[in-house]
Length: 205
Image (cartoon, rainbow, N blue to C red; front, side, top):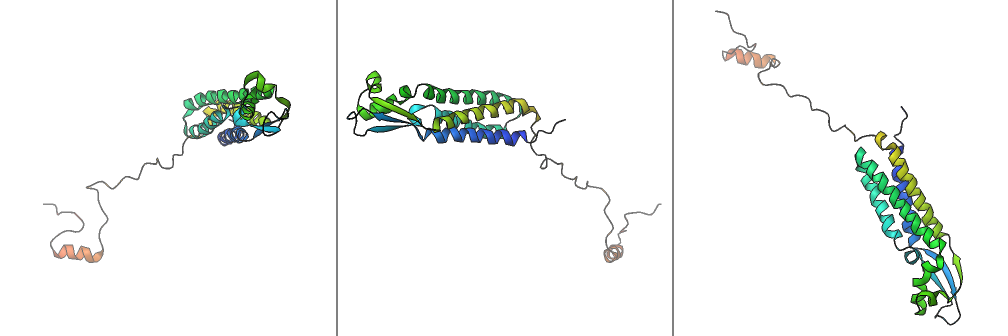
């Protein structure tokens, strides 16, 4: 039988890494937009991940919480959590891909805040748009979370169980009425002087 003791720590580590990548990229600049001169106080604006992919933070936190649940879950629950983790990873990926496919649409809330215009009119104020590496980090984190979920699903039944070192049965205490070792010679002599037989035997009559 193949030893899969490495699967549990690897799955937990991958889940943590993917969640951290998604959460970290969410707080960074995804797009830089040059605006039409005079459209706003600044000639360019920076669009954060929280604007371009607002759901990414909640999904990343869910993956982070899932790590703790997987660490203590029983076998059946691990499989259920694996399916949930795969779904979370896919949702993270969809959130990142949607922003990358149409970065201007994802940036409209930031343009509206800077210019006071909304919708199509706000989009017309963008002259150029530059994509930073951070949305790709979010997408990579999503793929890692999916991979971790697949790993859990494939190996959950082979993860080591909880340690049994505290479950050992304590040694039985001596039963009442069982024979005990004789005392010291001095104590035996004292018992004999008091009229007691230290050996516990009686004369046959």
